Image 1 (cartoon, chains in turn purple, red):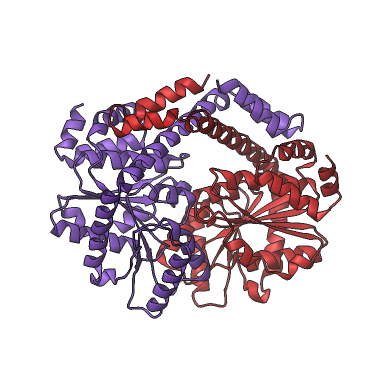
Image 2 (spheres, helix red, strand yellow; image 1 turned 180 degrees about the horizontal axis):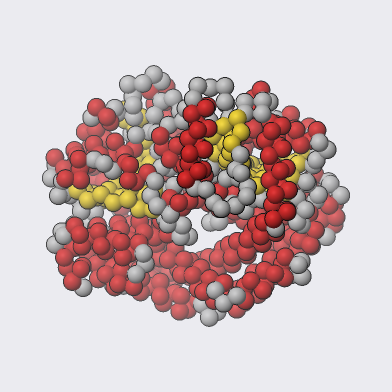
Length: 312
Length: 312
């Protein structure tokens, strides 16, 4: 495919076009992805998550700048969770008004679900594949770490950075606790604020409770991203984690899991589409729902009969 | 079923047991749900959502107390989004240490996903059905309104209350904007704080931009839930919305949509389970993933062949 050849040579328009095709699930996208798949597997995927207001975007920008100094090509995927409501990215446009846009070695893209079931996860998988094949050394996936679907997305990264800040409310602390299990590197950002040390201690305690029996030390780093403080240490922790994953064989394991997840998600999404096309579009489903409304049937019996008509 | 008969007579242990059976997807649960389905459709389902820290739980408690004064039986389902990580409800236990637990006319339950795909939504649908059949006049579904899956849950309510507060950060405002489209009644809680009037004005502006062409006025109410201020007005807005839905036929429409959603979700979840059992458990899937790892096949071709083996 000509578009693929252009993208592989680093043409940003071609890359953007491919990701858009994939996002919109055009048939050409699958052809392109098939062609590009053998070239994937070189990029290091970094997931960055944390509660709203923790400064993830600034953090990502600074990390990317540091990696650029080291000669790495970097892509950023800003995965926007708010969009299911409105059909467009809410955070994405605002967040990415960065001077990084002027750097040819950086590619930035916002992804939003546009209301499609599982769409965000699929679009992220596709975009990661495309950027990986196109030779980006690091791909950052940035999300507001609150919903299940985002966690599922971030889980597929090689290295997961969890960003938090002092002074968040109780609910947010509870959510943060939930993200602990998936984090590889923890960052207390805005560490010049009161209470930063307390957050570090809390994290240490919580990580201690959740301690897995592996050799990775789950570092907790303090940063003031807006002032570029502590950024080099984070980049070095990422590189150290990359080397750790490589050495222990965990990198191959995580990537294998990512492929598994991707295939199973695609299967389920295709099935969902099939069910929609088979039952919902032709109106027969509406008749069945009418029966439910009149209490002539129950939902569980209807589900069984749809399955019997669908699955081999 | 004996358990169903007990639950229908108001036995709380039986109700709790039925919801647990449904949550864990025991076969008995489907039998029970089939039996109870014809008795559903009387309860008014109230969804209550808002960003972390907006005081949703306190709000729900006070609304429920007011409805109890009016002789209504009320159930609360606290849907916990943080749990996918740990397998248990994080918010739920903490939130619900309320004196409402002593009231025989109130039933309170936390629901968490326990890591199952689509589990939370399904468990909520089931619990709503059970509580509806058991004669609760109002069923509150309370979530932290941030993830896609929660929005999908709350969307199935008859009346949707969106709670916000003055002084939240930028990201949260962005998320809040996303919830606007689904709200029927807006509440600015902690309205004794600075900036409450500004939030009301912002909401009015945003609602003006999003104005649908319907006759419902989308009221914006100010409350201080912790001091019981403004609670009666919220309850009356809910009752007014209930009457509005009834009068216009929208109630039947929303309930029909809820049934549709429920059936389609169940179909997809059953298919997912089928795919897992057919391919993942027997090891053949692992062999196929090995081929992907070796780049001998690509994920998109594998998906097509799994679908060809699965769907009629």
